[in-house]
Amino acid sequence: MSQNFPAMKNDLLLRAAKGEKVERVPVWVMRQAGRYLPEFRAVREKHDFFTVCRTPELACEVTLQPLRRFKLDAAIIFSDILVIPQALGMEVLMVPGKGPTFPQPLKSPEDMERLNHNPDVHKELGYVFDALTLTRTKLEGQVPLIGFSGAPWTLMAYMVEGGGSSTYSKPRSWLYKSPNESKKLLTLLTDTIIEYLIGQVEAGAQLLQLFDSHAGVLDRELFLEFALPYLVKIVDKVKSGLREKGIDPVPMTVFAKGAHYAIEDMAKTNYDIIGLDWTMDALHARQISNAHGKTLQGNLDPAALYAPVEQIAEATKSMIAKFGTKSYIANLGHGMYPDMSPDHLEVFVDSVHKYSQS
Ligand code: 1CP
Image 1 (cartoon, rainbow, N blue to C red):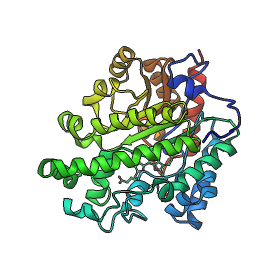
Image 2 (cartoon, protein in one colour):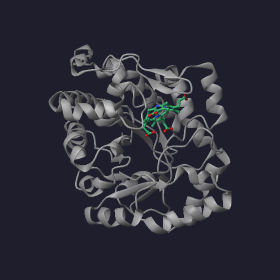
Image 3 (cartoon, protein in one colour):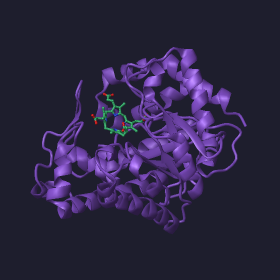
């Protein structure tokens, strides 16, 4: 499927992703659509969370909201990583004040029998593809559109734990007690994600990000056994699958939050961009990424946006000084928090514009 989308007016993100020369560092922000924006809260007052995800016009609208306010260099499609467990047959509720909740998590490996082992991705997740196509069209080439998925380990963590947790002790116990069954689950997730991401590119996504948000509860040994091989299969199969369909592969980002121990392991894969959380050292990551020809993305502490505006500008300037302006995409080290001020985000975005011209 090759669609005729509007020509790009700003492709800084795509050029930085490939390590090409840019006039200025591109900037976008994780969770740039969300509760910190009053216009997002207004949409959410009328529609529940997954209705917004499943209604292309609504998903498109909230995707575009932050772009109307800030000089951002990318849009990221409004959806959630938990749409994959839903596509595999699990129920996920968004409980106010608590976040995503699975009424029936996978309590033991036998529960995997309940899952749909042969999901029709286009049928179950076609609404995401429709939202991407609509949004890419409505963007009119203003900025590139990012698609995404949760990584297999992070999705397994939610499906077994049943919701958010600081320890993820239940899914971690599977890795020790039932390593083979864990790998079966990770493989099912991986194969579904591959099809899902290829479909996203066919629908209009121009860059793909994998969120391994709970990599930080693993150590390197577990990460190398239960997370990285699946991330590698995803990047390799998505790129080869696109080529087989006659579609140019898009740049891909791996964001493994908390995986300090694996920056070099990730730099050796075919991901183009390594996303850094705010606790990771920019200079250390830069040494590694230069050796492997990778672009870096990140990593201002989101909490720095609570500081007075002069301090935000200074922190942004020093972040850029550490990363340099080449092969770099400015972002926060994690997503926006709901109680943040849009005005403070504006200072971050404008400071990237101001301090990164080259
Ligand atoms: O009611 C609401 O509006 C809930 C808040 C919210 C929002 C705005 C959730 C629930 N998800 C989202 C959107 C979302 N989720 C996006 C949209 C695009 C954008 O960034 O602007 C994206 C990319 C995600 C991805 C996502 N969902 C991740 C990976 C990123 C990360 O934060 O590490 C994760 C872990 C989730 C799960 C999830 N969904 C929502 C919440 C509150 C959570 C975290 C739950 C937890 O672990 O406690």
